Length: 378
Ligand code: GTQ
Ligand code: FE2
Image (cartoon, rainbow, N blue to C red; front, side):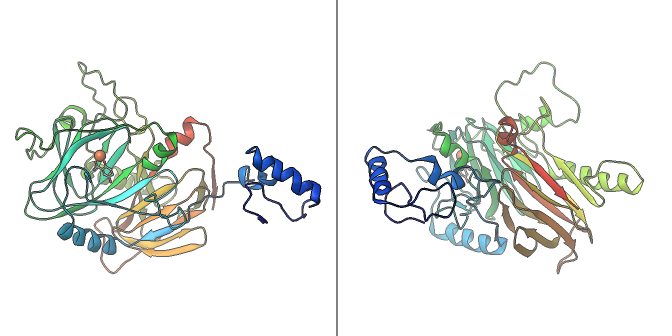
């Protein structure tokens, strides 16, 4: 309870350790204010809570609404130097209207009209793209043109030059994930403009990027290549491989072998082929497949997640919120909020007859700082 605008809060005497509000106490707190001092005893509950209490809340964004508004922006808002990208970010309702999906993670829908180019730039923020539907855009990372198709995951570690171009006659939408909110608090960001137009030699449309030809062979590392920059050198993880990994896990389970997270729940993490670690220094990315009729255990962990439904339908519970979700829908799980899903038959049948969830988190940061904690209840 605040009795003045003073940074020092004069609390009602509720706890035994709080002093009586006397003229002497008011005088003391005025002294604190004048010298820009704040005592611990009025702040401790907020500063040092017994368990995480996220400033963010669970929230769901419907893909059909995002897509409709992005298409509208496509008609009205040009893309070019300065604004850089036609990207529209999810703003968690309790993060002050800032474009932050969670306190650490940026999530946006990006939209490119036929023939459009998003100019080249680079920044320290680590990024990725994920495609829930559509095709036709190539992202050019360090001069390497990488195709984007449904289910493809494209990591792009900080400080790589990148531009995007739509080579088709159809608009395309996808989602971007970045650590913009996290880097915002670090005050260590850098940004540089590149060329306004990439060269014709780069504005090409190969089916596979050079990075995939070098790095996308399971268990095989090119001997003559040393990779020293942060994050994965593989610029696209194609859906074909992810899909097979997930369906194999479920088949192995049927045959009585281990591999799934829990019965009917397969999951994979995208990893850096040079060291097996997370694809990006600050962001972990996973895909989960929950078989029809399966309900997962309830998990809560420190750090926040953003999910996008890739395929199928089901019911998602995050803390006190429960939503029916379908293809493309996005939702956030704030730190320490209990999370579970149930895979159900939807209006439209899914390709995999299951609920496929794309997920990204800030887990690498929490693990590095030894702040990771997890609790599972069945
Ligand atoms: O595509 O380069 O959503 O730099 C936010 C910042 C996308 C991008 C975003 C970016 C980009
Ligand atoms: Fe960028």
